[in-house]
Length: 309
Image (tube, rainbow, N blue to C red; front, side, top):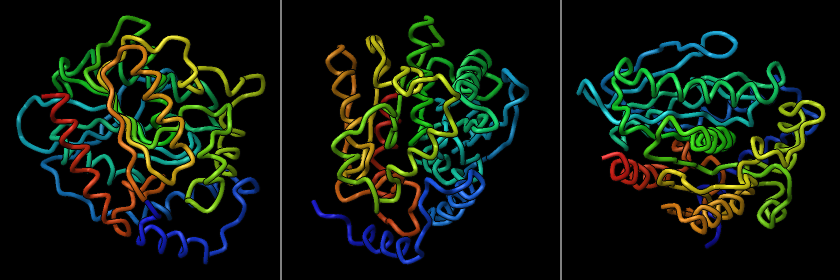
């Protein structure tokens, strides 16, 4: 399918701004760029309650924003990690995505603000994600979450964290998860796939951005092929919870999402894969200019409800 016309217009608008090469951008410029990009999010959905909290992390308190779509004291829960290349993004930039997940899925979403590089390089973000999962699972009632109906989710580089955290939980024998949801996941920083070559520039996220973020995320001596960095390369992916993988047709990370689906299926896991036609990376977070985002969240929300019912 060709590029969606609205997506094409949006990309042309971005290109007309003559953005600088991401490789030469500072981290602060990368962060400001993401803030500006997320201004194209859909108008915020109204929810019953939104509450900021903290939970204990390995290096101090972690901020968590809790999204509640309805009034029941206990609901299924979804722990969410935002995108941003592990160097950018926050609870605020991805507020619209967390709202949409809660609203469409009928779940209490706990959006976690993990530490970012280069101030805190690998494995800080992963340690925070693991700590958040353990704490929320162990204190689910305090969050109004049913521990028996808990899922994990991430988008883009947040999906890197979600996948690696899920694998670590399986290897450690818990905490138990009923769902893994990965949206346009980045799962392999070590190799250039066909989709990375085909969409290396001009499709929102590009190879230069991936290179920039990885340069600041990884400390010297850490290989991109480390499975905790590239969860697609884990030696054993058996025993995973039911998994939903959503990619976009014109996304450089499309192939690694597909490859992870294939690996999970071959290992005997329950897994589904959707590649959204005509879409680009992060399309679901740009609802003000890409109306299809609403359609995608209707599908994703139905899948969440079915998995955590």
